[in-house]
Image (tube, rainbow, N blue to C red; front, side):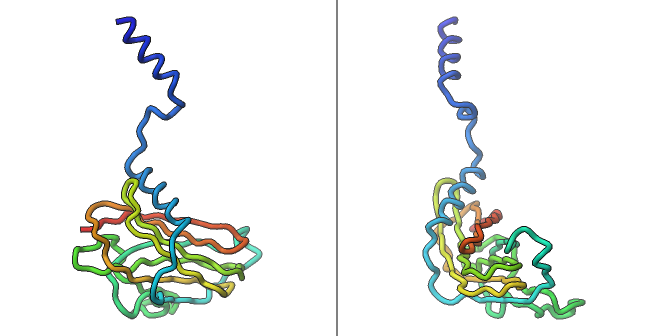
Length: 191
């Protein structure tokens, strides 16, 4: 019995702090998706872009841009769009494909990433990555060469459905030259 206790004590001392606790599937998946963002190749085709002016005060924020959200829904024409929601109180509204982050077996997906450009004038790379555990399911990017300061953007890119079923995570990243990067994640399910 004493040898067994000594063996467990030796193993516990040899492990780094926290190494004995396994990481959750979600933590591993998010790490995988964030790492995949670093090497996302350019997406083929032209994204659907919606842009609107925003009442930003450049002196009121320490950052030059803000990443808003990432979402996925069924691909369709006409979205994303600004000032297109019928019956909305103001013209400052956005139309999206159903942002329910569930892709059926018959759907082509539209991946959407949004950011608000406060004062940035450098080019920005928008990247998406989808992962499940340690597996990268898809990754792609788009370069916005001359973003307008004081604007908010919503980019939608349609992608064929990967041969994957189950839970995943979609990550989005906006990286503007010389102004840093910001990321967002959301859960995703492929039927």
